[in-house]
Amino acid sequence: MIPLDEARTLVLSRCEPLPVEDADIRDMAGRPLAADVVSVEDVPPFDNSAVDGFAVQSADVAAPPVELDVVATVAAGATSPVAVARGQAVRIMTGAPIPAGADAVVMVEDSQPVAGGRVRLTAPAQPGGAIREAGSDVRAGDTVFRAGTVVGAAAIGVLASINVRSVPARRRARVAVLATGDELVVDGSPLAPGQIRESNLTMLRQLLADAGCAVEDLGVVRDDEALLEDVLRGAARRCDAIVTSGGVSMGDFDVVKAVLSRIADMQWMQVAIKPAKPFAFGTLDGGSGRRVPVFGLPGNPVSSVVSFEMFARPALRRMMGHERDLLRPVVRAVLDAPVRRKPDGKLHLVRVHGSFGPDGRLHVRDTGPQGSHQLASTAVANGLALVPDGAGLAAGDDVEVLLLD
Ligand code: AMP
Ligand code: MG
Image (cartoon, rainbow, N blue to C red; front, side, top):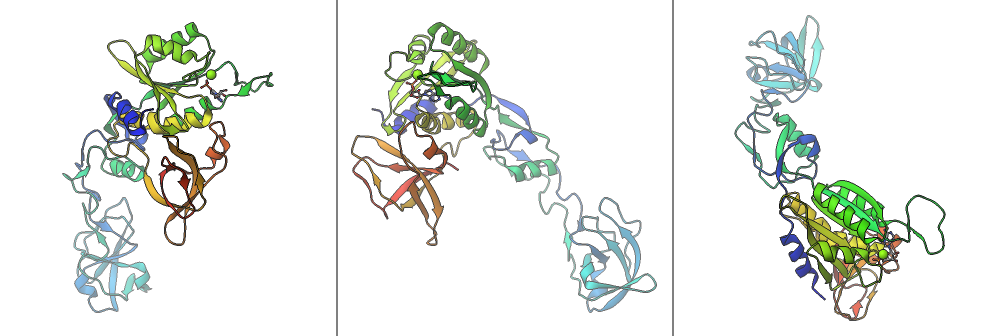
């Protein structure tokens, strides 16, 4: 058996970052920037009012209450037709440019209308008060984001605010995914004896989409070597990576193993983890000298998702330009229930659900039966407890937990 870290390092070393493209900022959520972003504009672009109120000369409102002549009104998007002179005020809306002459705004809540087009201001104004200065959010010339920054919704907003419509980013990985197994039923028809419902492909599509990949669903491929070879070779020509489910262990009809052994440079691993011990990784010729990574995930549904999490997701993230946080966060938590296990040389990845307790710590307990076919207890887990080889852990023990969400 090969230790998890060693297997992962091997996989990562063979999954190179994809080419950089010019990506629309609206398609950037969750993706890292491939270059620094420098602003060429100030945000805000001009001094403007932080409140609805009255633009004034602060010297006029040093000792309120005072009454001033209201000489104009300026809305957001407009400019004041007049400057503010001593004894005058301009009614101003949030976001409107500060009129010439004014150096402060008094908010409308601190004012009362007075007959004859005048206003009484009841709170003092300081120079600069309630004014948002040009460039106070972002200044032209600032490096707003460094290469490697993972873009979120607010970053997309910042990019829009500085008129950056597209940014350099590694391409999203286009990933072909297929399942194998003649027992699998996908179309909702009644189950004949020996048949089961397909679930991995449906799940892996979603895992890939969640990881930010573009998915090419190749469906269930029958356990037929010639057919599978055709499908895999085609996928390698069109895609950046291939994910297969099933057929990588020791069974007689493990056709994925038979075909990939022949056409790709695969490594058939027995990883020292439970579940997801069998795992295959290699590369397939994609034409023009391209080597396309192939992730051969085990068929047992829980092994399939765990194997995806341990190997495929970090590798695909690396391909899409992530440098930090290839792996999900691992935190220390408290076990609220014992975890029983026997020494077997493997790290056990135990499905757990965790929530924060009044002590401020993450408390976890297992979500039920841990068989590699028992997907239901995986569906309600929000973490995998990393239970080291040995005799298990007791309630109250510390445990490392990989956070799944
Ligand atoms: P295999 O890795 O092909 O030997 O499959 C291991 C176990 O996982 C068998 O019980 C299969 O029936 C089951 N299995 C394989 N592929 C799928 C799938 N796509 N959906 C649900 N179960 C599967
Ligand atoms: Mg099979």
